[in-house]
Length: 199
Image 1 (cartoon, rainbow, N blue to C red):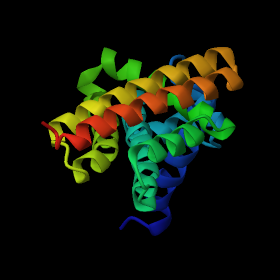
Image 2: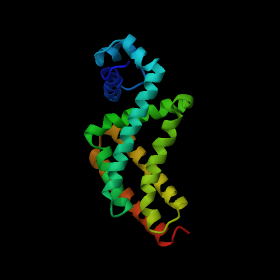
Image 3: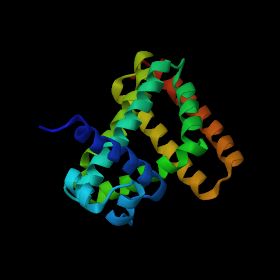
Image 4: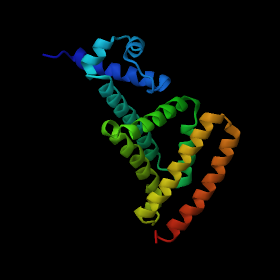
């Protein structure tokens, strides 16, 4: 019979593994330094996760669950309009404590593109969850879901581009101003789509 402590152990390890990956990335991941960092051993990690590849798969799933929880929290806030949601997203994405998580998400995205057989779900869900969230407001205001998702696509692409620039340049003042101008253009697009009933 498996003891409760044995069931909790892989959960605790996975949380530590994700925290390690956020700080160190996945490109040069090696089991020995990872095991040391999470107070375990390569043998124990392989016992619970089977292989380094499976460990990464589980870590990526955990990362996605955290991102989904963040989206759910924003959805519960019920923003007045899409631009308010975009401002809140930028504020959270560009916070110092979020930067490492974004870098890991970007690194994982590239990994998933190279290995869709292992991380295909990440590619789908990492986009689809944001599309659903950002399309909600325009859909409620009369735009067709097809047009609302196009608007959401523009927003997602903008966020990713701005975050790449921010991580590379650290020019917060320039990026904040650029995001503010960009959100103004999103407002115009949203008004057009919503005002025409999605036609």
